[in-house]
Image (cartoon, rainbow over all chains, first blue to last red; front, side, top):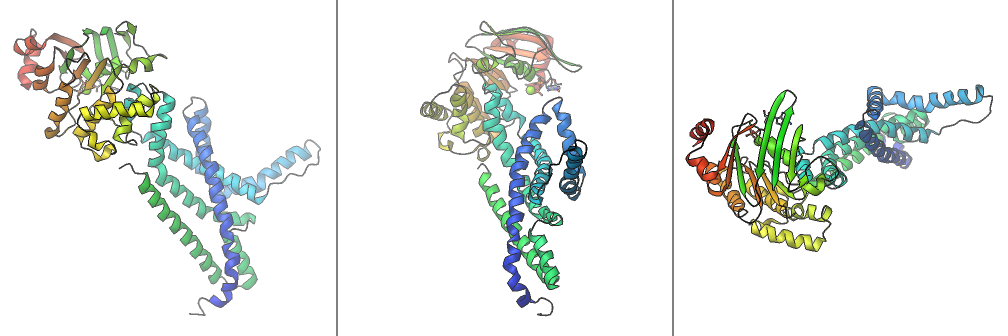
Amino acid sequence: MSDLFNYDSISPWIPYLSKGLGYTLLIALLASILGVAIGVMLTLMSRHKQLSKISYFYIDIFRGTPILLQLSIIYFAIPKLVDTLVNDMMHLDIAITLSAFSAAIITFSLNSGAYISEIIRSGINSVSKGEIEAAEALGVSKYHMYKDIILPIAFKNSFPALMNEFITLVKESSIVSIIGLQDLMRRQQIVTSQTYMYFEPLIVVGIIYYLVIKVLTITGRKVEKRLQYD
Amino acid sequence: MIKVKNLEKSFGDLHVLKDINYHFKKGKTTVIIGSSGSGKSTLLRCINMLEKPDSGDILLEDTLINYSKNINAIRQRIGMVFQSFNLFSNMTVLNNVTYALRVVKKESIAKANNKALELLEKVGILDKKDNYPNTLSGGQQQRVAIARALAMNPDVMLFDEPTSALDPEMVSEVLEVMKKLTHTGLTNIIVSHEMGFAKEVADEIIYMDEGKIIEHNDALTFFNQPSTKRAQEFLQKIL
Ligand SMILES: Nc1ncnc2c1ncn2[C@@H]1O[C@H](COP(=O)(O)OP(=O)(O)OP(=O)(O)O)[C@@H](O)[C@H]1O
Ligand SMILES: [Mg+2]
């Protein structure tokens, strides 16, 4: 057993590894908050004749390419591009930098915004036409209809999908390790390079991910039950 | 109370209402009958602008009903009860009834609650006031829907086949409530396939077919000796 999994060698590293969870959760949390804001904006835009094209294009691009590519473009390519534009072409000397953390937040927010807008849209479509007509027939204004009927019901109906998106963010945020952010995955790589242990740090990090996602799933189900109207 | 003049409505190529003219009289109960697809629901839905007419005028007393800024003011005076109840699923029974009082009529919660409780008592469902709609039977939901519409103190009530989606044993509890609304000064316009009920409560009957009013008559005459052949045939088929 101790040959397969050397607990004594890995145990001093566990606190170091666990700290990576901070980044993982922070990225998922900030990205989902900003993602909801972007998602709402995209949904509103999609109801507008001209703006809907932009919204459709945005969603199409972000859903149609891998997030690893999006992150690389935002972290590596765009600062270089801006640098060329500003310093070479305009003969200036301004330092153009984007921290790994900012790049991660921007990428994940933009990306989850695209998914969340689809979730919000189908949530709104799930509200029965009859309920909306009943409100109209009572003389309820559009504003109140959205605030008191459509959005609350849409939120309840899309909660499972939103929770799912959050869990996806927790898992996918692991790719920020490629730009050097010290999340769970990155710390595993660091421990491996210092100790030459592969299996143990991977298992520890795997257990942390698994437990966090389990807790999120169970909490999500509880909230989902609370949201039911009965 | 409601005058319909030269009303026309099409859905694409489908001509659903063809030159409808009728005067729904104040305080009277009019039952609209006719086969499926004859345009009964569309006529009802044009009255409160859930469907936008192509041409023609509809007047509520002397006010032209059209799809403009004042539509919500007009809709407050016209209650509607749907075949599929359409209660707000995210609100309790009590809140379903008080909702429009609070946000449309801007009444205080206390005042709205009082009115709602009185109406829930009237439709016999006071004990379910804190339930959510999906825990109620169809008949119970429809009675709440009637209370919700009545809460606004409308001049006119529109009913679109209010018992068609109900299990047979629940039809009568809803019809009983509706009966109480006749001869109260309220103008009722009811689309229904319940002929017994129509005979009992209707002052006037409108028979529609293929988007036209084929016959309108007082209920007694209509059921005893309809003046058009098509109404005779229709009655023979269903009675
Ligand atoms: N929103 C719509 N779009 C397209 N066609 C419609 C729409 N609403 C109704 N129709 C069509 O218009 C015709 C009349 O419909 P309407 O609902 O008024 O009939 P009805 O007399 O109420 O019938 P039923 O007894 O089945 O309720 C039908 O052929 C129906 O399919
Ligand atoms: Mg109908």
